[in-house]
Amino acid sequence: PPRAVAAGVTADGGAPSSVLAMPALRPGGIAIVKAVRAVAHHGAGLDSYLLAFGPDGVLVAIIEAHHLTALRTAAVSVLAAQHAGVCSLRRLAVLGAGRQARAHVRAFAAAMPLARVSIWARRSDAAAAA
Image 1 (cartoon, rainbow, N blue to C red):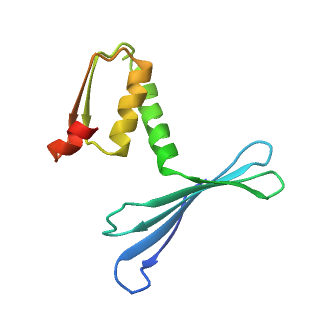
Image 2 (cartoon, one colour; image 1 turned 180 degrees about the horizontal axis):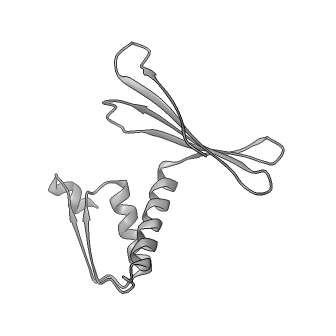
């Protein structure tokens, strides 16, 4: 289903703000909603949670979704590379050194025989830490 978006401003009337809801209904009646709270110029990024409801409608899990999102995005990147015929990658270059970059390095290293990984970031200390 399409994502729902509610837009507004923060309580102090300052920064633009929005809430996104991405619902899914699985066979057997399990419902999942990923909820994301985005505030413009918010230094810590997005707040993101996954809510899971059982077939009876009872909330069964609340999961911080940043890790799951990074894992899923990296897994899809590996699948795309494999679908394109890149199954024995030995060198990987990553632009950025954040959560997504680290997840991509782990996913590609688990799926392919990497011999070398190069990471570029605006700050060399961030690239070295990744």
